[in-house]
Image (cartoon, rainbow, N blue to C red):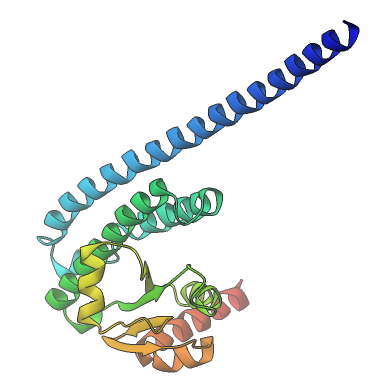
Length: 231
């Protein structure tokens, strides 16, 4: 009788522990999903806003064009996406949904910048890098290439880097892959409409960048040094 009560008591305690763990896991999972949904809603608003921005910017004079108004948005959304992807995993349905939204926003910014460059001439032409990667374990150099591109983007503020998941099932990305003849040989980088495959060091990529971009950085560096000496 005593043994039976002991077993029943142990069973109840064990069941309570499992139930608590289950409900706690469900609660926090739902909280994370709610957070993801909020980010999705914010991105949806950003995309709708960008559509309006495109129409407005198409009408401005070239003297009023400085930089894409979406650059900061892309940076912030990219950080949110990267953080969420690390938490949820690359095969999570919510993450895939988010990446599609983000990729579309990147493409919109790229197209707008190209249109403004064509309208306003060479002096306003930005420099683009389009980067295709894979995080399925079939591209050993993709993560390392990502760090290289982050370094270049910090060194050259005028440089715009757009990153796309090669395996993302999105027709707009498929179209870009066809335009730039991107195969499964990754990492793949597009600079000045020319495609390069395989890992590239920072030095190798810098040699592929237009001289005008390096001249801007050199001029900025000299101006900063002169200002510091004057102070």
